[in-house]
Amino acid sequence: MTTDSDGLRGFVPRRIRESYGLKLALALVLVLFVVVGFGTQLYLTTNAQLGEDAEEQLAATATMHADQLDIWIDDSQKQTNLIAGSEPVNEGDEIDMRLYFSSLITDDQLTMGAQSVHYIDLETTEIEASSRDGRIGEAPRDLGEPWAQDDLTTLEEGEVRVTAFEESAINVTQVAFVTQVNERDDKGIVYTARTDAISELLHQSTETGFTTVVDPDGQVMIDQLNMLC
Image 1 (tube, rainbow, N blue to C red):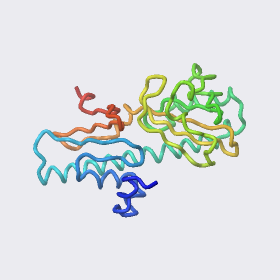
Image 2: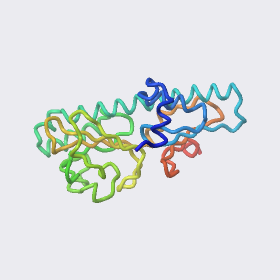
Image 3: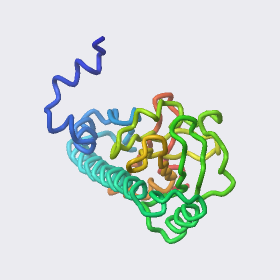
């Protein structure tokens, strides 16, 4: 079935459709725009009436923000794949994996906002090893965590599935990156990062503006204005 969004895609140049950052920059002309890849909306507002100079500044700011988010997402996906192909994960020893995952977090070897790394059973989502000992044995699907609701057994090696800006069962707003363990179609790696840390990437270059990221239901996930208060 063809949706309205499918029809609109035909009017967008291919280069923009394939670039998360360019999709953000293009849509900024409307001030309110949709991040197609992640179902979020980014509102960039100013206290003064928008004039030509302000619009140009807003466009430049959104392009910068889009590029920063694009790089962060790409780096996080790469790191998730690196973890999935690492020696401790390939050997499958749960104690070694716990130590390895914990060192990645504590030694700041991951992207900004790194929160946790889990080794899971893709069918049940049960956490078998984790940087957070208290989560071992939990099944995030049963706890309602959004990233765990899909059929993760359909993941292909090298594919990284992203669930962005969702409220997790542990009451932390996060982005989850999920991939299959190399040469194992029954195990997976989940890397999560906090969105409040991601907001530090959105360096604001306008004196009268701020950036807010909300989910499709209108729930605020990143609010620079309140963070400054």
